[in-house]
Length: 153
Image (cartoon, rainbow, N blue to C red; front, side):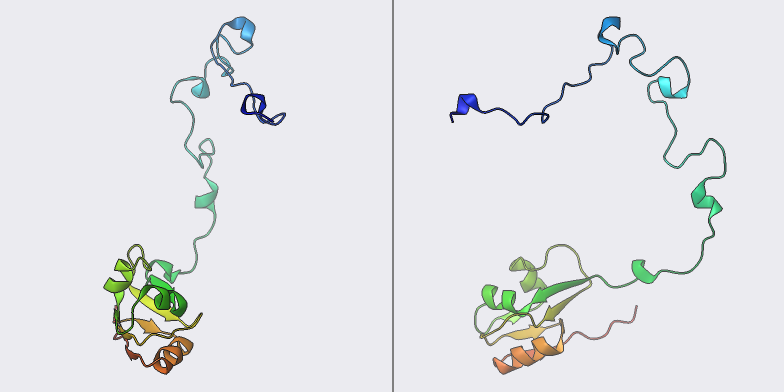
């Protein structure tokens, strides 16, 4: 097999539909849009969900209930094993240091440490939520934990 003999699989490549290239092409003149009407014009067509003036489905259905998802805190999750890899013995672990270590990316209201993996380093954890298994592992390794205060939103 040589580079000059490589070919795409059968059916992988398809001819591009070239509109408006003469009547004999089969897509000339009106280019498959038909004659006149809203959909034949440039920029024409209806918005998504439009049903020709009929009351659209999203307005016919009853609106019920309440969903708290837009008001809940966005929490970043970090495992103990990844903290063990990125931090040195005696370091402080908080939101800023986790962002610098690239374990937390983006904007979050809080960080929660989970107990997946093992930890051998003595770390000081500040301002993070900690699961019970992670708390046991950090304290067993000789670290200290100062949990974040509960915020009243």
